[in-house]
Image (cartoon, rainbow, N blue to C red):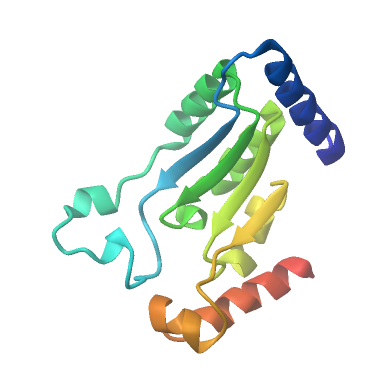
Length: 160
């Protein structure tokens, strides 16, 4: 289904729910993995008190598919794929493809640093959102040295 048809289907779904008064989890934020390639100062990933098993936790490909199916059955028609850093997931391409094929409008939220090398895996998503904490040194002060430049390079490569 192309992007315009999916967005029209989402709009129709929302209008139907509004008219009928039904409650469904139309929008879902799905945290695919806790793993991250950055160590942002404010993030739980840098908290040494958190068990390493929790910091490395992620859904398998099959678990992700099962949850997507469950969300869809409950009425989910738009999903935000998050992490940690979702582009670190080894099956990110398969998962993106599965969600989009299911008819769910998909936004992938990333720190952008892996976007250049992982673009093919996420290009079928309806939107890719690069999360930044400001421009240049402001961002890097919170996320690490040259993270802003790496994120911008990822965005430029994705635009190509």
